[in-house]
Image (cartoon, helix red, strand yellow):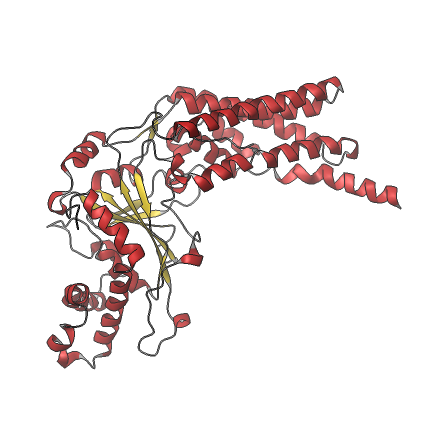
Length: 443
């Protein structure tokens, strides 16, 4: 009985890595993190057959953008009123500009029950707000020099330890295990070469540098980009910053400094992952080699820990060398979509004489008579609501106080105003205004 149980456990162990050599999500994120910053640590990666073609014909736009050829997220510009597919999606995800359920436990809830409607009966919308200020020049290695040393030390250990284990297995003639360990070391080596020899190239550098020096005088260069996988979904990612910088991040594909090196690194990694997957597949169902499967699985899990620790304590390491000084606000939960749109419209942005103020909301609501009526009510109230709260509304609009549509608009504006003046929103907003020159340092 004991022998049969042990045999069954060994058989199950031999099948354990099967899901790992068929998953492919970590390949792209690891390569992008290696390109973005020298302060990164590569985990053990695996890949399946569909990765081979992508990696063999790899280009920087595909790698930094939508590697899996899934539905691209959409972007709408508040300043220009235009919408377009999102570029550089993976870069923005690593930078934390695209968030969904992260930090929902500490979300800001400015909603107050109004008009007898419960929270559950309204279409909740969560806004993930970020403020992005570009660095005037790309940082090569300055800042956190000790962290750079730690990253390269861990990388060296990730390369040497599998080689040592492979040597031990070679002595005992476990050649399949040798292939598995050498594959891990080779993937670490390829990613280390990418990390030390390449960096991303962001567009509009001359304009961005000019804006950093001149600041945003008179709101002439600021924009807000609203990003969503689908325009009717619950989560909206909102990024505020200079117009040229935001378009360089969301609308213009980033490039890699050495594209041919990236191509050959992708091909080398494709061969390594193919050998690794074939070696793992040869162990399936072979309980005599269950120890090899377990050894590889243990090392694979162990190598996931350093990147997780780095991201937990220094989440900015993936983008701080070139992208932006990023300030992220806790998620803001609004009771309905319109309250979120009103809040977004009150964030600092430029105005265009030839662009209608609410044109950016065309992706959310049809441009019909009902929407125009709602916009007129919001425009009539929002300055009073944000600046004088309710003190001037009741006196100037007393004749409309029983109008249901007026009361709904007023409730939405009150909710948006509460979010706008919440300390966790207002403090980073004022800091952002100071950085772009909209208010004095003492404000």
